[in-house]
Length: 264
Image (cartoon, rainbow, N blue to C red):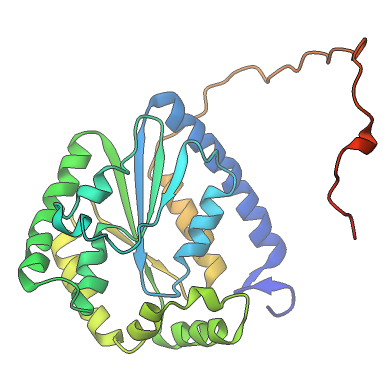
């Protein structure tokens, strides 16, 4: 960060806009709950493109009971024998819920394709079935929004180097991330084919420029909110009753409790 700015956006402006968007996200979640809307937001894209940071900023002001992040690991041996979409179906939202997929069923069109974790027939079956699957979700009333986070080769390499040299970020570099670093061209080709088959008018892909993290965060959250004609029902502010006086209660001495040491 130079001159108190973050990615070209002055820090004060970034924080002010993020706070404004957080307030809107709270209104949006309340509207989702009040109307029983079901929302799925898919985050896909290049490694180190910043989607994790955006997800973190979206969920931070929200009630986790009604907004959850789904980030599935490698399928088990049992799951590998199931219908491909099956393990994702169980995480779909109920009325009043927002589900964010940090990676999704599009694994088959990306990492599984590039790393040969699926067969040719499984891959082509996915490309055919995915638009049908998503249309079924939409026809049932689910609002589906898909984001692809794009990042330049140069910026991705800078972020990989930062993660490799920062002990606080080493965990972000999985063996798969390191291997994927050598397959930039293959991932580009896989993305192009995926878009060709799944970028539909009813479920389009929205591309987020991730080269500048803070711009990507504001732009993505702002766009997400713009996809809903939400409004907050007017109501009286909650009124807190007076607290009851603690009379006639014999409590043990405070010294009998074990307190966490306070070095600060």
